[in-house]
Image 1 (cartoon, rainbow, N blue to C red):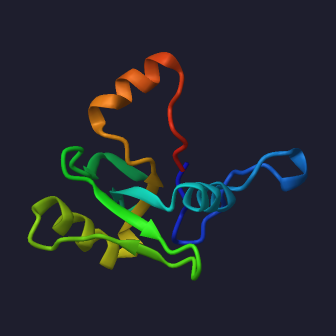
Image 2: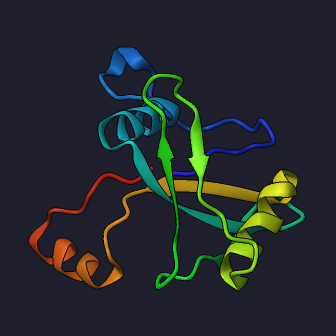
Image 3: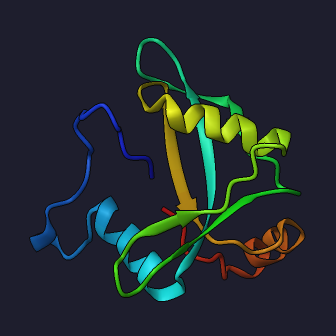
Length: 123
């Protein structure tokens, strides 16, 4: 699920329907794992996401940690890394990008998790 940083409506169930909002799911993932992987996406002028322009290199993902005491999220960005530089550029232009946080399992394991139906949580 993606969160619109420009304040658009998010089609989410009401909490009394027994499901959590995107922000609550993300908070639960961070709280449970204290780590995440970051992907950034180009944003088209009309507000749609350009899924063909994902600035995320599976072999060199950006990882991060969450400090459980302060709840601050810490990104581990290395500007000299070309993939990380693309992420950093998108992050500094939040109006034209979106961020997705999720698991940090090695990319070769993802097809295996998918086949056995044990995909880790992603928001």
